[in-house]
Amino acid sequence: MIKAPSLTVGIEEEYLLVDPATRNLVTDPNKGLWDEAYAAIGGRVTPEFLRAQMEVGTRPHATIQDLADDLCDLRRNLGSVTAGHDAAIIAASTHPFALWWEQKSTDKERYQTLASDLGVVAHRLVICGMHVHAGIEDPEMRIDLMNQVSYFLPHLLALSTSSPFWGGRNTGLKSYRMNVFRTMPRTGLPEHFDSWSEYQRHVGVLVEAGLIPDASKIWWDIRPSVRYPTLEMRISDICTRWRDAVSIAALYRCLLHMLFRLRTSNQRWRTYAQMLVSENVWRAQRYGTAGDLMDFGKSALVPFPDLIDELVELLRPDAEELGCVAEIEHARVIAREGTSAARQLDVYQQSIHDGKSVDDALKDVVDLLIAETLEDT
Image (cartoon, rainbow, N blue to C red; front, side, top):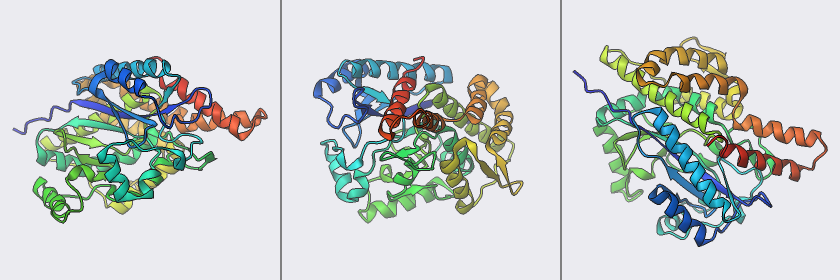
């Protein structure tokens, strides 16, 4: 009998700090803000590469409902702290108009090393993401499920897109963050490995050559976590609305549950070449929920909302067992009403239509992000 993975679930989110008056990034937040954040949240809030960023992490949870409560608490508490220092957090993967060369990096050895290794590539990382951890204790199963679930990464990206602007311009993409992040080495879809030992051997080549200290410097769209016995999904933008984030976490958890369920019946999801899945990744970052993705079984492009309808029905038995039917059903709402990226573009275009300048229209987008980040928390 194969032992089932626990599939405990946790979320890490990265926020940008903005000045509510100028709507620009707070390039150098004061020490008091960080002291209060640590007092309110403890070690679950940490600095990121840029001083204008803050990262939080939920605890691992056995239910999606507990995860949602934890995430809301983190956003609400951090929002309260930053408000006391004339700042606000926004959950978006890029800032609508901040300029990367004006940002300051955090004065920590690990970030100084990153900047030294990557040069200007590191300094352009004015981007934020959301990582979802799912507990899979058996390392062999971790690799097997990583190989299979990679097929669905474009779907999760499309549901999360929140970065249509870069440097004050509409990029034409729903997730421009992906383009910035892909300039880093060791990013993108993971390799296919036949076993945990094969994965370790490949990592070992890089470590022994002195290229990386450990596997934490492999930044794939999904990877075995170095710190925890989890499979860490990293492809998604950060969701501005917490309900969208929880829905994506629920979908990811249910996908892994479904793949394990198939495994117990000696079945598995067909794996496809990276070049094929990469096509869907591109379409997800370009169009978000408004476009089509390739259904490789049908060899045809299918409207994204139709794919989500099929996916929700496929995962219904797993969602019922895990108690998160409502949360995966919410993916239908995202697919039809659009993500944060779509709402940002709507606000921007409406402001321009109303006669506002480009600068003021972009500030209206920041106001939307400030409001939605703490909405209903």
